[in-house]
Image 1 (cartoon, rainbow over the protein chains, first blue to last red):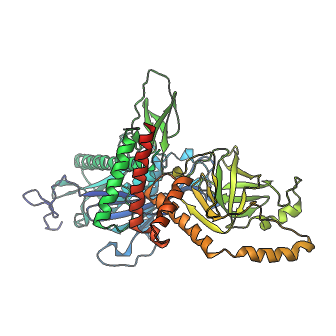
Image 2 (cartoon, rainbow over the protein chains, first blue to last red):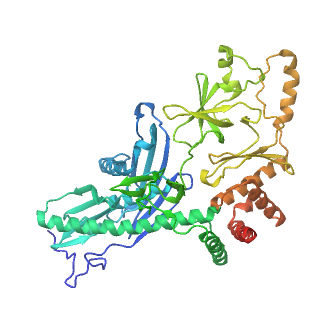
Length: 244
Length: 321
């Protein structure tokens, strides 16, 4: 391991947060005018935009499913999202994998059987990448789906946690993420209290893993509360503006 | 929160905020705390029998919302009225759609539903107005009636067993729409009313408020029956002349269409429910203040309309009391 100190003796991280502190959250609904539902979600410097189209007619007839809706997801990263401007080919390994992950998590919560023979498209794009893009994408997609009025079992929220300098850290940023330590991304359904996504790309002893995961779940719950607030505020706004 | 994507100056922002606050205070008297979001528990009396309707699900014996919206209770039925969603058709709704495909004996129409709607050749009034069996020749001439990308007005006929939707256009008032603009807004903003066809006489304009959120603003036509495919040679010549006459829309008419279209646009971005009276009031407001058509989409006019609406609703509330 490198000698870099990720947690100072005073218990502060590189960006001045406490180990169990999350970055600032910000969400905005209705950012893409032509989409059926859309949202921007920010976690600190990570910024993601999501747009949902549908449920609409299936474009490719061979993909039509008779008893439930087809969910599709496309993840992309803007060229300007990272520090070094790189032209990445569309559909590389990483983005295909994240598209699949987002699709599976969202499909688990959408009540697809209510919209047979139709298709739902989710597009997410990372505008600024600073660690935790996966979680931010899932959170943005949830907001966009709720905005599109698509029936869901529960909202899905996601958050990451890591383990560096023998301290569990919540919501890693880019520097901490690239330190090479374990990075656990968790997605939960807060109301049902179920886990829909769990990813880790390193090894961790079981007892420490439980701690780290518990921390990530706490983070998810905090995000869920925030998303709830935003959605409720948005619903109230729409209702009173509409009038009688 | 849904923000308007408009460049607002400091004063405009405050004025808009004040107007919205006024609207909020007016509506909060009617129903408070009825708004729910996804996975919120809906309070119901479990001793009484109740029926769970749309937008709800059962979770460990609790009634839980599956969409964001407003809880509505009708007798025993409890359901959540979702706000921003795609159109949910009901039989008898008047809708406006766009033809996406001409298929065997049918047209497929995009109507903002989960699937494309189907308009059968047999549920159309024939151009010549005679009731008869549809022949193979009629089938070949389908493109003479509607082509791809044509805007069509029709009525919801019924649902097929597989959930697809059938339309009908068995009246003079339905059919192809020409010489105008199609506006697409959120369907929840269009209220169901007795009248969805409006003839605005002072402008000579037809306004169709499709229940699916497609709104048509176009030049008035006497009988909405312009798809005459007359094969008789004798009338061909006169037809051509007539056609030439009809292709020209005077500038004033086009300006009127644009003014009304922009009024609809402003109202829908502000999220106000739309009816013909409100559209006309907005048009009058813009012309009385001598606001240019293109300036109607600017921030100042949005603020003005919001203030005006707040005033209007407070007056309506007083009258009701």
